[in-house]
Image 1: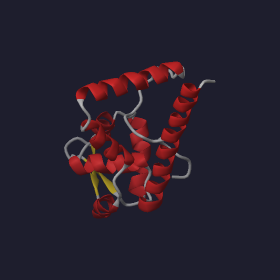
Image 2: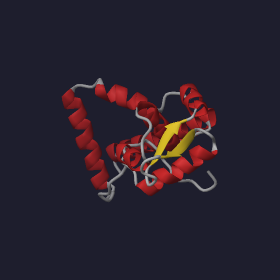
Image 3: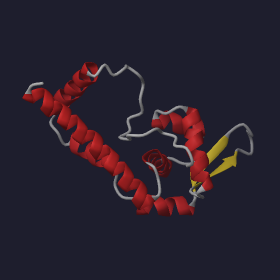
Length: 160
């Protein structure tokens, strides 16, 4: 392997480790996973919403969002209310404890990244996207629809 190949692999490893370490720190400080925190943030900005609407906003499968909401409801951070006129609709909203936990949570690596990325010049953003797409191709990463989330683990973890 030449030096440039090693530099790319080393940088990729640094990125993976940073995401993993930030995820662990977030979980330690807030008691929440990144997907849980992002759902709370989405609910703060737009509530009450249905599970389907929330799944669309988060670009996640409805079953995944339902599973995360179950854990958040068990923690007392969200509540579900059945629509009085249409019993098929269930509205989700933050509880006072959910608002409190959200306000106490640290900034995510994802939000810091987005702020810095948006401050880059347009050509720098385009160059970075093209480089990352090239790396994904070199790694033979499959073209699958993924949520825009800096999370190194699964969205649903056993025991949560």
